[in-house]
Image (cartoon, rainbow over all chains, first blue to last red; front, side):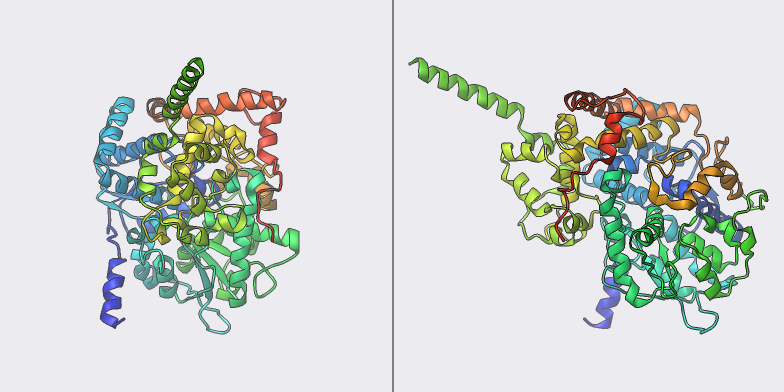
Length: 347
Length: 257
């Protein structure tokens, strides 16, 4: 293919991402497992980038995990999502930013279904009216919270205190990016770079000094599989998927993993602990585990935030090997300190 | 003459049953089925890309083939089978299907119908739906979150590891330290969702069939517990039937390595 053709194809996989005035909807998984990441996202957007981000306290789960656990029917989920849209409309915003890939995929799927089946949208409007009396407009712009960080990656870079570079060797850190299935596998044109070459995390890593590793199982699912993890009897599937990825990435000697979806970092973090308990095996090149991060945590590290304000103490696989490689200035003694409440400027 | 009459009547009754339980027609009522299956040419790309097919005795291509055949008996077997519960709904199949089908969406419609008809309790994996309803479903209707994990410790989730024990022991202080508005009014992480908002969510479940689905899961699970002679409580997770469905694995699901 000629280079002009490649550019034209690539253009098809760029998405429009709003610039300001964001309506933020939270993630059930991120709130429970990575609360510091949502705090960090808002710190960066509001305090560093001076953006308008609004959160309506009346918003709820989108029911996504229940929907993909098949206990919640499709029309129920659609109506709950329609209620989220109604709250956004009533708050005077048009650009919705879910903090969750399951939500992002679900919103994308619902908008696509309504596009092809307008009678379904009308039916859901009636359900919402009957249940709550609310009306809604569909969002003008739908972007996952990682899309927003990707959009402003250069601004973050311009304020960077650290880079994804090994302090001793001056070599770029070797980074595994894990996108999360529902970001672009269902609707490739709705994710930066599409399903085959998703660029949302790679763009951040390269901008912040790191080097992304390509490895055979790069696009494989982390193994959440909804019911496949949520029910204890099925967890062999979940750990087997993560193990397949670790075995595949290990020869490429990754320094860290960066993730897009709220659930994936939890699985890639915890299953390393389990595999070590079962098989006595660690996948890091230095005999440690491979530290796993959310993109908010990585952005926070680049900006020089305290690791314990980011919530890195909630990881089972230690983050310290990565901090040492970067040459991060932090206090290891404060890792499990709970009494000091830092001013995180949360509004 | 009377023999012919009997055969004629049996044929009428059979036809009536067929028309009452035309599973393909029932599946077509689900918009995800309409979106998920156009015309499958059985190339098997979905199976090749599927993480579940790598692990379980599972072949989405076969399922698409059975559905497309319209064979009512075979579809009924599927609805009562283990195999429809193996998919992890990652939707990798959607990306790669050359015909624009989504076997994952067809699976979702099969799972929905299996629960509506009460067939889900005929399989070990299907019976697990009660566990999902009693955990995720309960959290949605009680708190407004799909997950609400304070107090949910390593006895149910041992892989969460020692850090999870520390998190559980210090939940409230840790969440406050990380900027959460735990159980607080106003916006923020794990805030208390206002009661009027929760009322709206519960009403949506009533109006749109969510409550009906939950009730069916309970009704058929209770029947199955009686059949299996396992103690069943009408709520909660501390009962014999819940523990049985949450932990039992007959080891016949996975591929031999």
